[in-house]
Length: 315
Image (cartoon, rainbow, N blue to C red; front, side, top):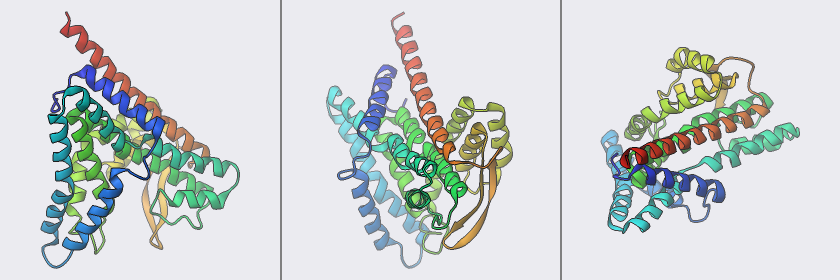
């Protein structure tokens, strides 16, 4: 482990971070990512101009991410262990988004079940970049399920993976890099070159977690169908990490995702994902349960390793 934390402590700190996230949810007013968002807007305004935008993007990524990661690592390395342990758990809490996923998606399912289509459209528009103004129930359900499956990796499992590997600073590294990809990783005129580094670094940091997430979804659902969809459909998806995650998740749930969606007023034909009937409102809740169940599996496996570690160390 790069973090030097023994497995029993990792299990305790991981459980503490998840518990804080589920109990407290997102810290809206004083969340560090709010300040980070302002910082990266200022950096982009300063550097995303003139020639050499790819190199400028590398510099911008370094300025935005590395100081925060270094500061987190310096503080946890300097503090005495009880305080350092608390900070590790707190950093994980700030970087996780498990409850946020539930809070932003399950109400969409409830609105659809109640026939409140306008409200469902409004809530869905908060979590996806596609146009939802004229979306029907099927399109909204599909958007909700896709968001849950993909962000299960981005907001939960990627963070947990890097926390296990490098403690609180690892979680900070992943979360900041993932946020930069969400802000700068677009293939448009503004970010094609400037956002290149943010997109490629996020792809690299996410490669292993995404495949572990896909395996987790497959294990908890229809395993054969999930593996088949992953193998056949993921290569056609534009993202090397979202493809496996969403294909395996859709296969595990036994629903069809992907297909047509409207972005910036243009109809985009996306490859199909999964197998089975089109997603419905109730499938949003099923997708949330899949993400929550996979989180429980990850936590249980870490505790199992911790107990084995204790058994071997005291043998």
